[in-house]
Length: 244
Picture (cartoon, rainbow, N blue to C red):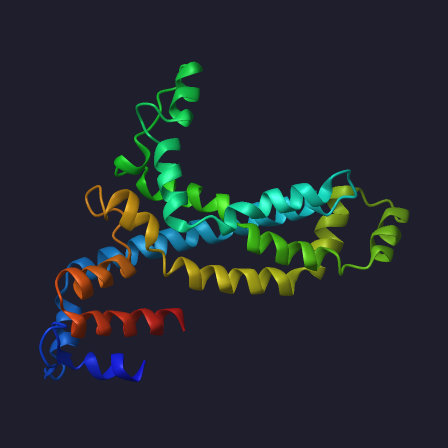
């Protein structure tokens, strides 16, 4: 981190020695037209994906907290997508969302609904990445499941005696008891979403029309495609301050 801070004040192409550039990289940051676009794309992704992931993970945890037969098998099955390598997941979802022969669009066509272009459509590219991310909420689900198992059963029993139904018990008993877990998952989710990179790099390469140029992808391009490691370090420190 100290080295990257030093590099942010230099011009460094990875091949020759760094040359001191003063505040040149910071001026370039202010003048870079792609930075506002990348920040908007990343913020849009964050503010939609984090609540969606929290809702899906909590719903899955509520189901898996029930005393059902083979529940351990289902807990493992729901968690498995989390350990699938990221590149493999993206390639799988590129097939699922393929507008010509993907199973999603084929199913929609069967009901007479025209399927969108998903990754290849500027209006659907970010929603496609958000939906893809819902497949791997296993870690958040496990944390929620652990939190649910710490809620005292006696509170539910008292609420039921007072006439509270299942929904009211969830809203007035379960959810308030889970607020520390919700907060933890939200913070970790926000940090992770601001670092989204693999789906955009593999599936869309930042397109179409720069709709999936996220800040880490923009940073990567300057560092390892344009060999501007000094400017990439400046972008990295901007991202660090945002996440912090």
